Image (cartoon, rainbow, N blue to C red; front, side):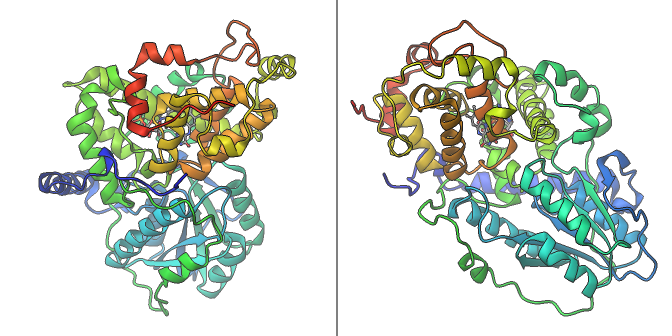
Length: 503
Ligand SMILES: Cc1cc2nc3c(=O)[nH]c(=O)nc-3n(C[C@H](O)[C@H](O)[C@H](O)COP(=O)(O)OP(=O)(O)OC[C@H]3O[C@@H](n4cnc5c(N)ncnc54)[C@H](O)[C@@H]3O)c2cc1C
């Protein structure tokens, strides 16, 4: 099957009025940052609990010549608490501000589709940094290899990083901690969650029910507007190497057969355009129709959120301005974008085995084990699944949507993963295949939401036990008939063209 993106209704070019409205929205956001604190972060009461000191050194040493923000998960300039904290430190110490991104040639299951989105988004970050007198650099290699030398060469006194709860990124932070000089301050800021992960809860939460109130009760403190990152008054006078973005693309050792998608254009401004379109046309229908894959009223914002190109906090602040008009939809959106999203981060942060069977609850492991020997009929190989060659035309259509558009509708994602459990040779294999296909093709993949989505569907994480049945045991079951009761399955199949393959 072709892994190229097809033009779909999602890919229409922006009409002139959408362009105009998006630039008005961008101006509106700029204005609200200025109204929040036009003089920038130095005069803004930064909530210290958003940050945690990783180094033993807590102060920036005298004589330092700069502060470095190592940007990783939150790839944007504005509306980024880690960036703001780094600027605060640089302003306080009257030194230049540097921002770096470390690009590795390979990253888990990420393909060219992901890297191109990431790199094109970073080009915007570079431009914006330039206009703000901030030195942006792209380092080819891992953080622990590249950052310590730069810190030494440039006499950097403080390094700030953002937060990802995933194992590899946690490892980078640990390794960097041990390889930085001991007199360099190293601070981590959670710029991704509205309520910082360590403040929302100090433990792995059982479900949305147990974390909801912990998060919602802290929103009055954390769900604030952002001050702007301002033009930095202390210019970097050293040598600035022009970034060779083509060389960066050439250096990648990822799967290049999975190409860009036509509908999703990277970067902050494009993310704002999607946000505008969502609020303008689809938000009013979100509460009632978000589970209908034919209607497509969802926000489609996950790629921009996950690459950190658009702050979810900014999106929530904007969506909330429609509270009076569409109260139910705004409430549902906040449940997804705040509670569910931050619950996924909570799981990955506190559960080392966030993407394998060992991370499941005891009851779920037991029930899957009890049904390990149940006959899989039919059984499909990973290849048959990737090629959308099952007997189920709905499943095949959803897989085609994933491959061609780089994003499957949220409702179908659950059905899709559960069918993999039914068809794979074991629960371990089902989880591995679901995660692999999701991370390979989905533009929003390689993210806590994806691991938790697969663990929920296949392993009952954040869910409860249901009536026992073959293969699934007590894991919640979904089937074709159920989908037919929820939406027009033939219409979806006509749209994506999944066929029936008998084995
Ligand atoms: C098997 C499976 C795999 C998934 N893989 C991913 C993935 O790789 N990346 C990803 O971001 N989400 C994933 N999800 C969660 C959810 O389906 C997507 O977040 C959603 O479809 C993204 O589309 P949207 O931005 O239009 O969502 P909307 O419905 O518009 O929701 C807005 C935002 O809320 C958050 N959100 C919504 N639903 C969930 C959820 N169930 N859990 C956590 N956060 C949520 C997302 O950040 C999303 O962008 C997966 C779910 C399942 C069942």
